[in-house]
Image 1: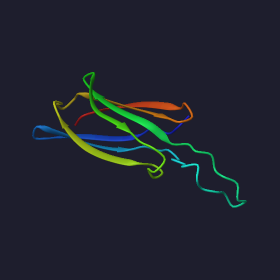
Image 2: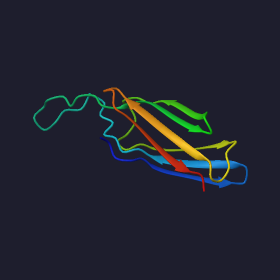
Image 3: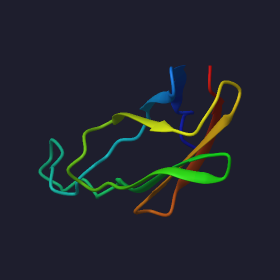
Amino acid sequence: MSEPMRIRAVQVQDLIEVKLMIRHPMESGLRKDENGKKIPAHFIETLEVKCKDRIVLDAYLGMAVSENPFIQFSFKGGTKGDMLEVTWKDNLGDARTDKAAIS
């Protein structure tokens, strides 16, 4: 099982500013180990963030994103105390969902 995501969501005037740090190896499948054997691909394919059952971010990632990706974005329509639900799914079928309240 993967480690929990770090999620910080803060209300600044009418915007909600979100910062995510996802712990994931994000292997492209193109690198080789010290013995010259290819390291299998293992990367996040989809990322979805919801607030009050409304999708506020829908992203398609791929093999070109770095290990432990950091994502920052903002949206309108949330308030302090609302819950964010962040879900990612990777190319091996693994998935994780974490939640955090807007402060």
